[in-house]
Image (cartoon, protein in one colour):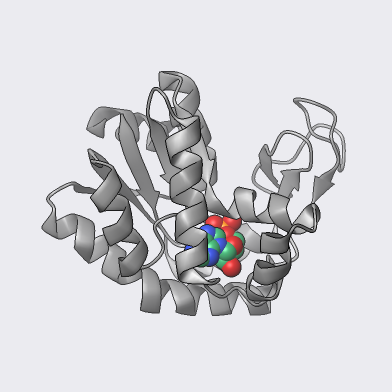
Length: 206
Ligand code: AMP
């Protein structure tokens, strides 16, 4: 079970990847979460990628690809669902050289919806659960329903950075969609509407 979830920032990749990973007891690999953890621990890698993340740009390609591919090799005995990786054609090729991807699922969401979603997004610092201040608020302001952890706004979830991340997505990640299309493993899912309905469509594909 080796899946890739594709889509613009804020398309619901993280939410759906978590559901899929839980359902099939496979690993959820979010390159953004891995890199954010490196930044917050102030590691050598964290120091190198921080400035790129703050600007919403692709970090040093070869280094990040090596880190993520090694992470997959060491942590996924039963399969994986990738979220945020691959983000460029280079990364897609490197991934394919090592692993057979059975399905790449693209969540389609229009750009104006993305901006609304991302600027209202809040993430739990402890368990990573994702909320939205209007569409999916927690029961208690600023606290995670699942674990009580503090909810925070990602520093790259501001409107200006989101616009840059969208630009990067169109320029760098669109070729990844074509890459999987050519391999005949690409599936498109409408990424708006009820989370459960979207998940149902993903399960149908899987
Ligand atoms: P995400 O959480 O997927 O939105 O990623 C947040 C930020 O981490 C991105 O804007 C990039 O700066 C960096 N990042 C995440 N995944 C990758 C990747 N596969 N390659 C390069 N940079 C990445």
